[in-house]
Image 1 (cartoon, rainbow over the protein chains, first blue to last red):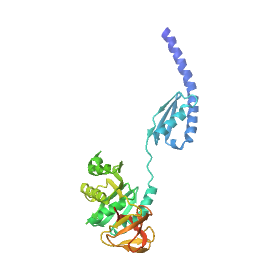
Image 2 (image 1 turned 180 degrees about the vertical axis):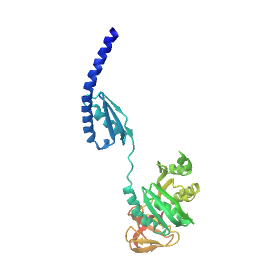
Image 3 (image 1 turned 135 degrees about the horizontal axis):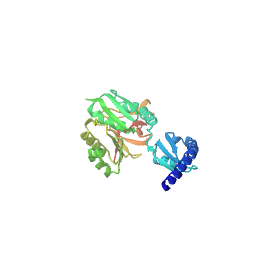
Image 4 (image 1 turned 90 degrees about the vertical axis):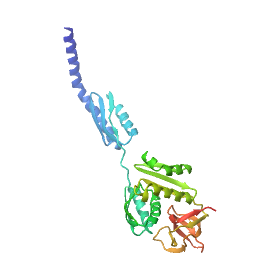
Length: 159
Length: 137
């Protein structure tokens, strides 16, 4: 007898929850989306809300952003908890400026090495052609001073 | 770890002179100022010994010899004359020449690649720093 009534109370509670959880979750979802859309660094963040628990998935560029996103969500009305599954993914570096600085210095660096050609991409200087063994260290020194990421001379014939 | 083991001999020298050693991606960078050209040349010889013809491309050795403005520099071209130009660039007109192994005066620096010098004929202009070795008095 007792178990039956406990059961029916529970069922009643569940039913109430199910009809009133929905709209609150939707409100939370809406507010979260609005907040996050104002944060360009949260462009790769996805949100699900179930029973007032907000789950964040996707990625951000650093720990600070991960924390900021979580706290901006935690303060929203009716949010009971936040599950932060955001991953940190470092941004891909932009080599445009470095490449252009290196390229502009290459003509001078190669002036005395007419049989050497060079290209630059993402900070990596790639050499082709040929060079005398005695001149190679001088060329390497000139290129090292240009702050490259790497000097690849594997295609350069050393005589 | 591997790179610091491979280039240990160079890193040990770098530490003696307070030179920065860093590792970015799979490339080691040794970067700083040395008191003399002898040490710089020695480091490059060691580099070539460890990695013949620098084929691995896993080290950027960028060590410069400290140069005093007003001090003397030696022309270290392979064998020929060093062009002294009106401005800092190989597209600039040549205003003079300094002979191989001449000792001339360092007047200033436009940037790390181009230094302002005065040769022994009194001609003043820019020369490629790579061919100038600071001499200690």
